[in-house]
Length: 532
Ligand SMILES: Cc1cc2nc3c(=O)[nH]c(=O)nc-3n(C[C@H](O)[C@H](O)[C@H](O)COP(=O)(O)OP(=O)(O)OC[C@H]3O[C@@H](n4cnc5c(N)ncnc54)[C@H](O)[C@@H]3O)c2cc1C
Ligand SMILES: *[C@@H]1O[C@H](CO)[C@@H](O)[C@H](O)[C@H]1NC(C)=O
Image (tube, rainbow, N blue to C red; front, side, top):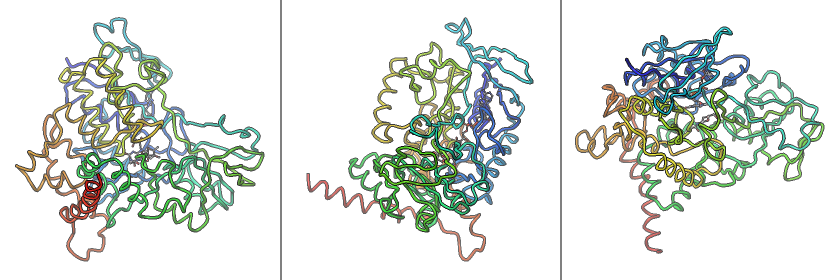
């Protein structure tokens, strides 16, 4: 009999976990508090307690070829960036096609997860769940936490002097659903992330005036990248990641800032990030610069204080007669069903080996899936995390010792600070992280070998987008369709927009891109070498 695994949540992380448990011969039981799969992507008109909540106009910011389950490409007529309802449709089809629904107990809340008295020997957990007011307790050999981290709003009301006397309305972006209520209003949006920018742009069409207040600024990027391809299809490549790792950091920083400023000069729009070269997640918004040019949105620094009707900014300017304030200030994560010291084992910081395993518990039978965020899509990341975790539970992979894991965490913390700065989310470079995880399970694509045996595929894997199929191309868990999926990914990308075909489909030319990209760094390298 296989080991029993409890999975908390049936969002994309939970679904990936069920599937990976099945692949390893484990017995998954998934608990989902709502009545459907999809998690964050299951839209509802009202924010529900304990669940993520999105607004009606959310579209994905990763493109479809980069955010699929690695053996389940989107139908070729799906748009590259999807409305939440379209993505939800895909997630449902995935769950049905892979026969995952029968492992899910819907409308069942996990209220407590505790170590069993025999934990030191068995590594087992006692999981308490609630359905229709009835509690049930069961013993599991392992647990996967997939409860999401866009749930508990970070509403920093205490850090804004005078907010208590403000007479208008204020809310968190979590409670924002659509713009209608803001017609003709003067609105202040606090925070320049993806949600803050989306909401500000949407409001600017109906509201009288919209101001975004931002402490640190952000790079604002278009979803439409070079030659009109989706940004991540062009930007998230092994080749670019390789360049970034070998170039001296002042060169790669300079190139990064230059790239980020090609669409428009951020300093002229009040958007310039305080620390430009930090690889903080950019904001993807095609309309924000145009709204700023049209004067319906403006950017201001932090709010120093609120009065009854207005906001005073750090620079002394004011926004008066404010009707509403929307705090797009992100989320805090919390796992109310679990003893805090398990995940935040040191200085109340999240301390997890590779963002997945608590290093200090005696048996490696608990994994957190979908918490680590990288400049890449959530679905393929969760899939790889779950594959590794399932193998650790099934004893076909072993973890290093506690002290080795702690050392690794410390080293990563240092690197994270350098690349991403102090931030709430756990970020890490996508391709480096994915390669690391896939190497643990023997599924990392072997590029030199590919160049020898299948050069056409190797070129696309190295210079083309680092799409999820790459991590199911070889090794255990390999998908036979991966090669073909990689070689046809550009066809599926252009299919939905080539609705009035004029000539033969064209892919980006790797050698041309290579030359273009190489000429510049090579020139810089030569200059650098001659100077030193
Ligand atoms: C506005 C917005 C846009 C985004 N856009 C993108 C994008 O374009 N691309 C991308 O890759 N990522 C995007 N993300 C990130 C997003 O987090 C991931 O895409 C993904 O949905 C995370 O899935 P998850 O399964 O980890 O968590 P969730 O989707 O939050 O699922 C968690 C599930 O767990 C259930 N649950 C929680 N607690 C319990 C409990 N105690 N008992 C039982 N069930 C429980 C919840 O009901 C929920 O169904 C976006 C996020 C936001 C907020
Ligand atoms: C997409 O938007 C979400 C929500 O703001 C964010 O968490 C995620 O990091 C973004 N993705 C990228 C690749 O920037």
